[in-house]
Image (cartoon, rainbow, N blue to C red; front, top):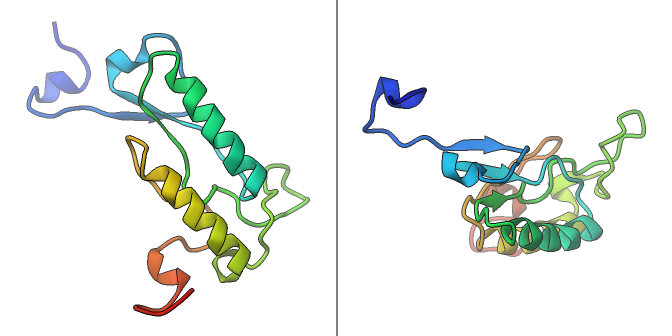
Length: 131
């Protein structure tokens, strides 16, 4: 007996995006993402190992927030500990964003997502120009 979305229509495929994972969840078309990360090189470096280790469990659908979720630092908010106060205006963040973007190209779900700074490509330079 079908359940959930399949009761509505068997013609549509369901995909769930979740930050929680368990053994066998790939059976239910769930894509896990690494959670709300901070913009710094150490976090990007650890995302590579995190993704590889997650996929070694047999669940191939793992992704991350390209460019990190938190870019700036706000001591009042524990998780806001990025390194780039100027957000997309900071050339250091632009370099980090490009490297994160390159990593994201190899993931099953490509998603530039976060808060506290714009992430649209047009925010990172003029058309045909440099950063």
